[in-house]
Image 1: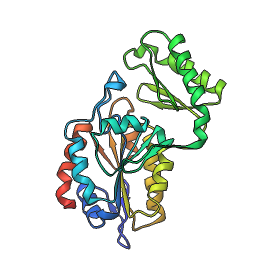
Image 2: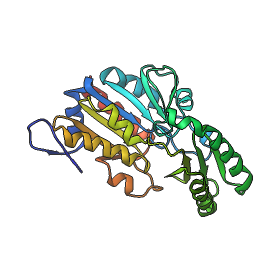
Image 3: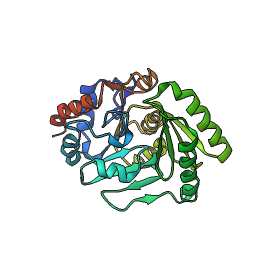
Image 4: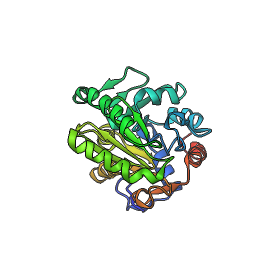
Length: 273
């Protein structure tokens, strides 16, 4: 585990109890970041049918008054996040790895450099549906296309080969995930960049994630802590067998599931109150 720096004190090995005590001392200046799929919501066969785990929305609502901000940083579009978070007020949404964002329920803002790629992504989605075999699920997100093989794991190699070849031909970037390959515009936005920007003047940050794309977010939290010994940074992995040890090894703490995350936050609320 990484040490937790508290001002001029010696670094202390991180455990949940100590992390919550450190957070409580400055909770009004701490930002809480959450991935969506696999973190707040269980991963499902049909990505359009995914819903937050029981108690997740309630505990986020209870947490919000005690901290500086709550932000969801996801591969999903902002509109999907807004629809699936039950109208929670005062939460910032960063969709498509930061290519879209909405602050506190405001309008959705798109990264200008990504907009010219919308027609390319639309054509790519149509091509994927026509050329990939039955069992491949093509998810069009306006600014990206996700190629899933969860319900047909035997197609994983074929789908990845097809996707990487199209990405190279079109000048796109690939983001690997849990039984999914996502093709994105060549625009410099990722979860780590989002976190790095938001925490520049924050006193602390917790980041909860489950997939390889969240490792960049963990790194951004650690970089902020390395630059400021007063900063409280905690990285939490929602562990799963599909990503193996990679994500868990990059985190300070691990949880078993989105349901366990809800229980973890619920148990911590008295510390902040």
